[in-house]
Length: 404
Figure 1 (tube, one colour):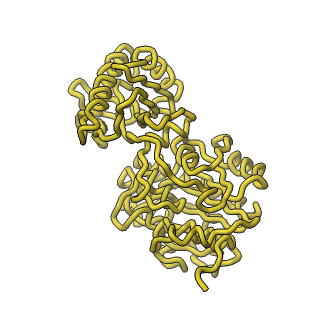
Figure 2 (cartoon, one colour):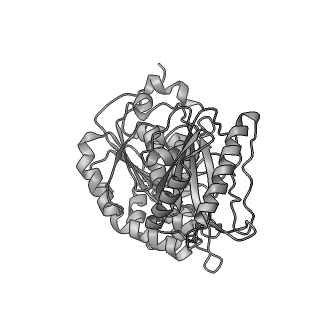
Figure 3 (cartoon, one colour):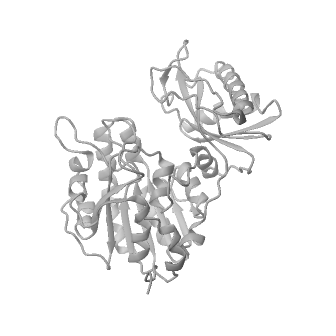
């Protein structure tokens, strides 16, 4: 159902407050030795207790069988149709670290990576080099490659192996292919246009990569190439204030998620990296906002690394602090993930995500554990992520009656 058409006549302001906690890559798959998922194998008594008093279900990020990127997964969770609003990750990365992006500029998300003498990718993350090493390499590249054929390249460190790039100079297009083969053991792909509009951009990026590899050869770093992806331009998208009459804030440590929040009009709060610091930031800003988005990343990183026990430990670390959300005074608290990242797949997957909603206006379904199988038995059943915001608005009494 297309609720966008009726939302303007339903939404209303009040004094209620909403907290959305996103545990990135939350869902998983059973371990072959135990038959338990990461959530089922973790000792998470606080999350289990919260779920026991919540309305629970499983959430489909985009559509059944569709594996989402982080951008589409979050847009759906924020109530925007991720198929209608297709946003490249490059713009999110660039906005997230405060880069200025003009309407005609091209934003790119990049990874330092390692290739062998044949151009085969041996490590897509260059061993997750340190942020400090990243900065040294970025300084070198910015010095060596400031401009190519009238196009200006602005290169900035994001974190660890990640970089963000803005290309300015007119006649730029996102209609080019990525050079990232997505898997180790495969050769770098060529950057090629997918339409005539992408011809100039493909040539510029091919030359940029050639010069980058030449410069990186002069270092002793494991990072000897760049993987470029997420080509995108600045989109037009309604903000949280325009769409929901909500003044919203983002509490996240990773730039991409800050960029996504900024794109939909959230203010970016800057806490430390620990969950304790993030919760304290929310406490201090509690009176200033109607809606808080809290993002927790490490579970996804562990899943992408194939680290089953590491993902369990990350879940247990979150659990040790998460019960504080119940005492913070929010009328609505949602705890979920943006997508599943099973350790066995070492990446995002299409599997539905556990979801819990706490409010005085729900019927608790008394699930015993916050896991995939238990949430499947919950009151909310199986639903699409775009419906999550409607549930949050309804349970905070921010939606009026529809029709006579």
